Length: 331
Ligand code: COA
Image (cartoon, rainbow, N blue to C red; front, side, top):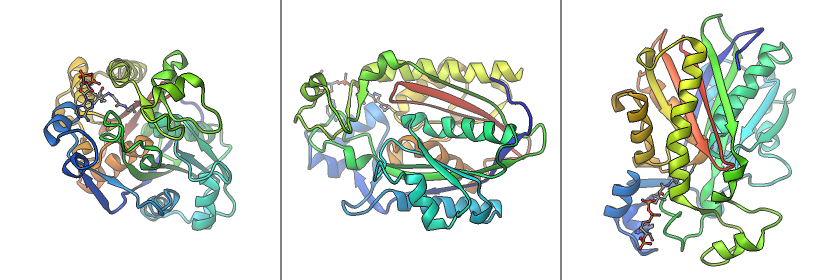
């Protein structure tokens, strides 16, 4: 894909995490696991999760307010809200409508987009197309997740990984040559059975897969996802760089989905990118699905890691199975 028409970019970015910290040592008390195993196999030390009675969408509201403030854009000027989530508090109203109400973005249309952990790169891709055609000017992409709500706290293969959080970006017109230069999104539905979160229906096979036959929780074949993730991150990154006529050496910063340090390290190795160019925060936050990339981008911005003219790659993968990447030139 290449962009056409009006150029778009990220005008403001925000990230928010729940206050509650769940450490590996806390998990040792809940399931048969150890801090050592979790750190070695995932790189995660602790994660942030919502309280049981706390909805996820309010994290999205806070992240959206930060992004709007940074962009200097009034919520009333937002044309569209796209919330990326695989864990909406309600199927209806959508999380986008819940957020619209809270921030007073009265003129915005609103819908949710589910591409699991690849959601934010999918969301930026959709937003950039609406702007490219001139259909909309300002779009709020909110990645808002509450994985702890669908976690089986007796399944040690998954409960050590997932967490909650929200990130948001105001996407709007950008000077030509800057902003969102390339995007690449894809899906391999034939591998979708490797991560499932049932909603209104569950197959017999998926009931059997779950250790507690609990229909409302995430289940995953971790090693299959791991193999897919490394390959997808490498090839999606190469695709956007090729399409832009750039090489890996041109990249100043890469912001990968924060799922597992082994996945990130392997993908970076295959790409020939040093870890020093990657933003990594999964040790503190775990995997909060589509929120992980915008939260890491927000932290990179706050940490002054983003400079004018930098080429920045955002790259993710997730349930579906899906994958995607975005090439930004920072202004
Ligand atoms: N603590 C201790 N032991 C554990 C454990 C835990 N939390 N979870 C699994 N084990 C055990 C398994 O039961 C298995 O034991 P066995 O050999 O006696 O059966 C052993 O550790 C190895 O399990 P395996 O699943 O092969 O480990 P792994 O190296 O693949 O690591 C994941 C497991 C889940 C950490 C890893 O596969 C992964 O991160 N995959 C990607 C998942 C992901 O990112 N998903 C999100 C997509 S967005």
